[in-house]
Amino acid sequence: MKTIATLMIAAALVSAPFAAVAQDANATTTTTTSTDAATAGGNMNYGSLISSLNAGKMADIGTFTATSKVNCVKVSTLKGDASADATALDNALTKNSAQVAGLKTSIEGNADLKTKLETSSCPIDKIVAVTTETDGSFTVYVDDRT
Image (cartoon, rainbow, N blue to C red; front, side, top):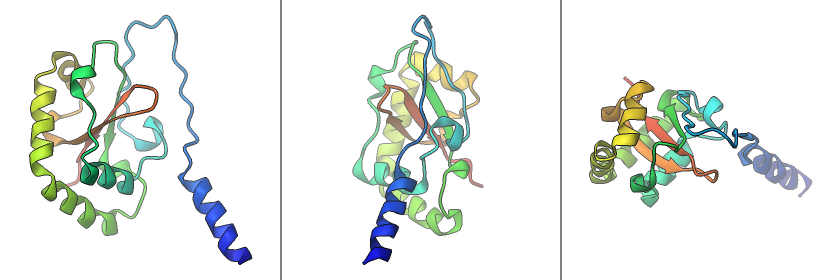
């Protein structure tokens, strides 16, 4: 029983977000061009991306403005077992291919987001998901696997 409780506590600590983000209140444009999951939030992993895809949890691209913050995260930087999780990610991408295609169309239709992604070397054709974070920022997942 003690071992189970210890494992549950350890699992809770590992899954809890530890990153804090501070913003300048006077900033007019906030753009983050991070391509590393650890830099962009630290708790991003294959499981959360796969869950977002399967649940249809994509950001409302229409709410993105010129002052919105965006984090570009490469799939290769996500936490987890890339060899084991790659198949699950591929399955989720196949299952949700229409949603991903619609997402790319929405990105193309939002000039502010498209410009920020292009200037941050975040290729639109490689984007597989966009989520909204609790601070209102957008996280863009780019499939950089070969």
